[in-house]
Amino acid sequence: MNSYHPSNTIPAAGILFLLALLVFGAGLGVLTFFVSKLVYLVILFPILLGFACGFIAQTAVKIGKVRSPIVAAVFTVLMVLIMYGTVRMCEYLDFKQQLRTMIVEEYGETDQALIDEFENAVLEDETGQTGLLGFVAYEAKEGESFTRLSDTDGSSGISISGVGAYIYWFIEILIIAGIALSMVIKQARTPFCETCDRWYGGDYYFGALPMSEKETVKAAFESGVFSPITKQLHKSANLPAIGFYLNICPQCQTSDAVFTAKLLSVGSKGKINESKFKEAVIPMNTARELERVVVNNDAVSVRGGSITQTPA
Ligand SMILES: [Zn+2]
Image (tube, rainbow, N blue to C red; front, side, top):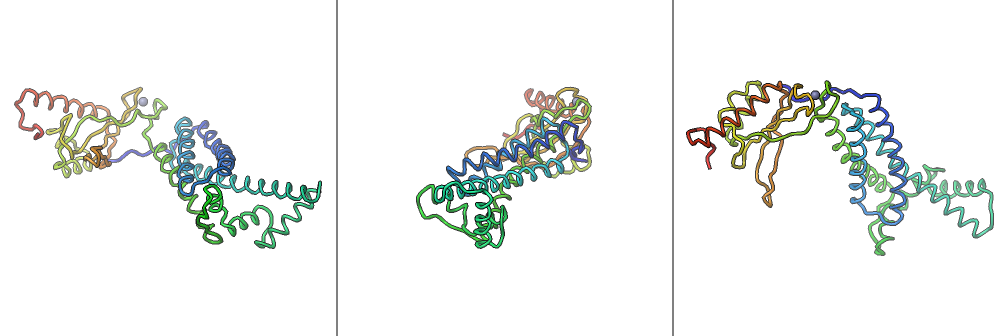
């Protein structure tokens, strides 16, 4: 049986929301620059930025009703790159400003062209390049990201410079993009009712089987014949168990349902761990039939006459 596949539709409003992400990326970059002047925490900051980008992009995809995971992913990566580039750009402008202040303090009011010339001469001397590129190469040479951290806590800190700094920046981008992408792709892949033009309501639990039925469940999802799993299906089961969930359109309740089986087990601290096992798109009447089976089986169990009762 087929699992759910997004329609890859992007409405006009969705395109606007995706384009807005690029502006948000620049805005977040400016904000990050100002915060990072006060404090910058290695690893923690990229993780926070990943969640920030992910949350913004996920919201845009949700409100813009973007059902194309690939396009959503491309715009998210662009947003992250613009955000990261904006931080560097702000640092460069800040550097230019500081250089100007320094020169004006020393020599009085100086023509900006002369200051630019001096700046480029210094950068070219240090890195072989001028302008923003020269400045980024200069930051890499100085191992800038790390010295900023050590400035804050007053200790000497770790300093990675040169190629190491580029690798570190690349890892930062990977962390940010990785977190943001996982959030955005999940949203764009969420089931959507094309008839009612709205997202489905989300998975709700309706029944479970003992873990010993795993092979039967697997076969049922592969064949699309669900009668073999209905005999023992109950509302509750002892863990570990296979839990069954439905995701439907909250409006029409006639569009196909997304039927999911998840493996449930008790993890550390009594928390229930769940991992997706199988998924199938099934007609709404089949979904309702499965829910009725649970109610009937439970009723039989309560009367005490059933041999299909889940062992205590
Ligand atoms: Zn609907």
